[in-house]
Image (cartoon, rainbow, N blue to C red; front, side, top):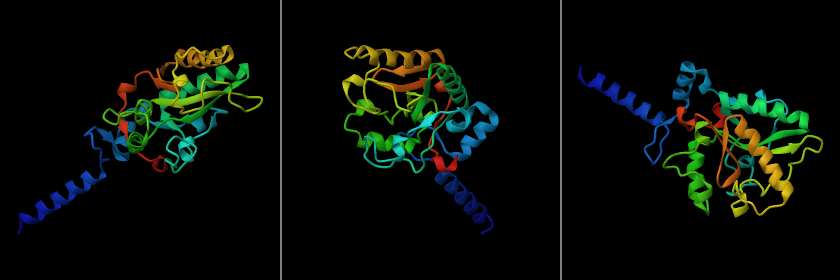
Length: 226
């Protein structure tokens, strides 16, 4: 009996720890809130900053907090946008560079919990336009951002090849059969993002991955806990 009680305590402790870890069918290393907080103590660059609080004048249009998205249902409980600290600092520079030209940034999405990536992959009609959960998304690492440019005078988006999250072939970042003004607008966006350490992905003109994304772990933390 003396040996049984300590063993029981250990089993209960290990079960509790296991239940705290985000589960995933791919067996990936995915950090929950506790592991994320530990990583931030070790390196402040790991912090997920709320973009709105650090990029003056940025506009948010968080589609996944509404039903206006390809899933046709609310995926986020809160209309907020987060990203790792170095990424947000570069967005701040981009916003400052655009402002004298009469432009600004509109954010559609940034950090995305891994559980949402799983749901996207299961629900998407075209898997080419969603991240494969076998590897996870740069969004899950807090190292990707979906965005466009707005005219500061009107508050409207400037003309781009397609709406956000379009599965059309015109959404490709190098698709050429477009009006000259649209090509110019897309080039302006891609050029300024590339200048500040981002890279556009081939099939989505609005999606940009941040340099050094490999250094950051996959996360599955809901916005409500950040």
